[in-house]
Image (tube, rainbow over all chains, first blue to last red; front, top):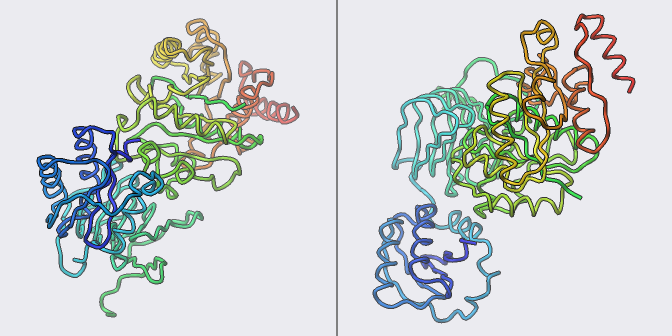
Length: 230
Length: 266
């Protein structure tokens, strides 16, 4: 499938670009563009040494790809060259799970660190079913999040209203991220790679008390948020 | 021998999703390994009706885009063994899936399941084409309303044009008292127009609303008339000859009671 035309691997600050040899350049470029649109944000702000494997590129093509990565992923390209010491490039098993490679990368290297002080998106209004609010930073929703609505943030999520939809804080791997809401009744709550859902008993929470959810020892804890006791 | 069955209607709100949930549950209860696929991307409902919404991690779009393996997207039902759901994505649209991808997915699921039920979105656009792409059989749901029957007719034509042979008709939300007064189309009126085989008639039942809101299919409720009708549909899908329930007589309380006892006996 398409996944295999271009795939990424990361090692420290080194990004390895694996391209299928038999595909022509335009196809690779198109596929790379799509891939960068969907996952390029994980490299944001990083300084990358890019190596490529598989397809042989001429200087002009190297320049086009390098510029594309720099632009779409907002990363600084320190160097761009062919990777020579990896003869196992043609083994498809090697890059069978691009998602996993990306997960590792996300968890270890480049996750959003601006939880205390960093980029924040303010969303005014209700996040309705089918709407996705996602941001590479903290998110504040000035309104409710309805069931079927999704909020995905690299940092913290604060909802000034009822949170009834799906929420994912620390989406690129930061387990320090928190979710806070005036009324916290999410369909599903995720922080980094920890996923929880409310119990099936289905009892409705009565009264509104602000609550805060955080991760400790890979478990999500939910506490009433009472600032006066801090 | 596994089968892919699409449940479709053309018109919205006639009960495709409710039917899918009930028939799927019934098939699983009768011992067949069943998977339900919601193809209504962007307006997903089946997960809510099944009460599985909060378990969704991966969805149909993740599967066809290769972000996860099929196994990872299968949500096991909380009550019944052998019942699984692949939910639709909510924040994408119908164009995220192509008919060829549905065929590939269904072929993979055929290996493991006895029945693959596809919940089709309303309309005749991309979502419909995705839903019917892999189907061996189709169940067309309609209500006894002129507009719903008109759309069902169009759908049957489209199914035939797409080589889905011999679709079956499921009449939903029939009210015997209204038919008797002549205020509602009767079963015969509908079959006259559509000229396809009947697979079931579901009476209008308040319990459906209750069970839908609770996320528990009505088929589990032994007291519900609609539940009984769905159990009959399931038996017919599995090839049994089951007589149709009669709704023609007076639906007084005593009659209902008698009928329930009579039905329970068989």
